[in-house]
Length: 173
Image (cartoon, rainbow, N blue to C red; front, side):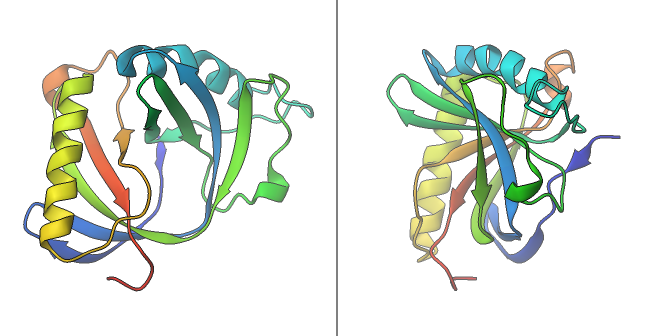
């Protein structure tokens, strides 16, 4: 069973919920190219890192979800969430210069779930819908929409679980 990133649901809205995420650590890779290709290109270096390709050879369990944020028209950051309880001090430096680590402070986020296959258009449509719903609810987003994939590529499309997320300004829940 794959460990999932912990959170607490603070409030449910029509079509989305607001969650609180405690501090966590990401291992990530920036990729240039189209949305779908980015996830594939980043996966190898990220798996290599958690499999021990870091300066101390430390291995980490695979967790869910895999996060992806579009940072520019052709620039994407793909991240693995490291196991709960890890601090940035616990995380060894990557051996691969393309891989970086990042501490993310506790925060609240609006989250909308959706099922089905992965493609850039589906993620973008759901991201735009979440932004609209967050605005209508009077909440103030911070940063870009980002996406969460919970399932391996070989899982049938109709069983896949996905989410679109948008960080919120503090004390909005």
